[in-house]
Image (cartoon, rainbow, N blue to C red; front, top):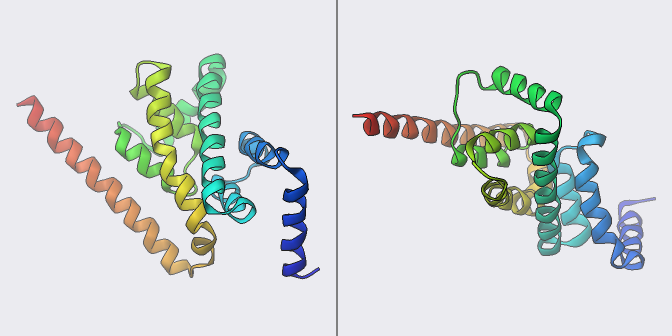
Length: 187
């Protein structure tokens, strides 16, 4: 089977699945962590299967629901919370991230989804506030991964590395800016 036949088979499946196709795709986002699939892979699939606009919306819905489930799991299972706290101490020791930094990290393809949810939980006071910032931070990855995911995955390694370094520089800039702002607020 060549690529054209594969694409035709996928289009036929989606055409026959009707309303079930988007629901199954959203469910894929929810079981993604159990299948060890990266967020970017599922969003790329959404762009391929549903097109940019519908794929981005479905990915946003799936990621937002996954954020809500993360919130519930972290609050319900103390062992899960302690594992995330240990992971936080390992990856970002003695560092308090801002909401802006978490949003930038959401765009980086291989940063742990639940760890970032944990950070947001620590920064917010209510579930509503958490969901607001979480949803806001999921808009960019849903759009970028759906629209540019395939292109990013096909870039040469040095282009991908350059994009990662650019995001890291923005992250660092926000960290330094927040530190200066915090020092000025103290004086």
